[in-house]
Length: 259
Image (cartoon, rainbow, N blue to C red):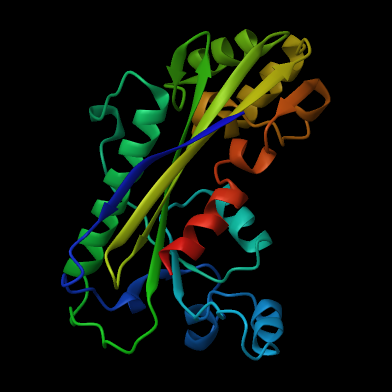
């Protein structure tokens, strides 16, 4: 497993930020208060019990810049409450030779598009100086197989070709996490790499995956957490959450640094 810090950039701290009340909530029954406090309540209570000797992480709003159900699940498992805002960009128009460069560039493009959209869809572009900060998490993941970068399959035939290639072989995922503090302009991103080794995957299992269709919507057609795929995973060198699209360790680290 590898990792790297490939981007450290500060946006202008004087750039006005939007009102984020129009972001799509993860569940319809969240109150505005619960959505705005992104820290887990259990963590807040523990931190508040300390008096001196440590800095308490301030409350903040959190936006996940992805519609991925796996990423939503991972962020919820981490205890965060958040809203969702997605980017409409042409990912195929952004090309880089190295997978690490590609996932970081795509994450930055998504973040920039989301920020621009939030600004154009809000009535008030000025955040109160005393308002808690808003953190945007943007991500991207690709699969690397025999040195080639694989993104989402173009169709069933390509997905079938992808999965047959993994059978009895090896692939890797390279995933990025990019965090932007929309109040201060702080931005930082990192990537990590996970190696995955497979047993032979029977043709009938591959056909079931193709027919089901989920593999058509993920990078490289690769879903190691799928019940049909799990029995054929030989070894994972790294973390499964990163393969699923969001490294918990990187996300936690970068959010804390952004605050």
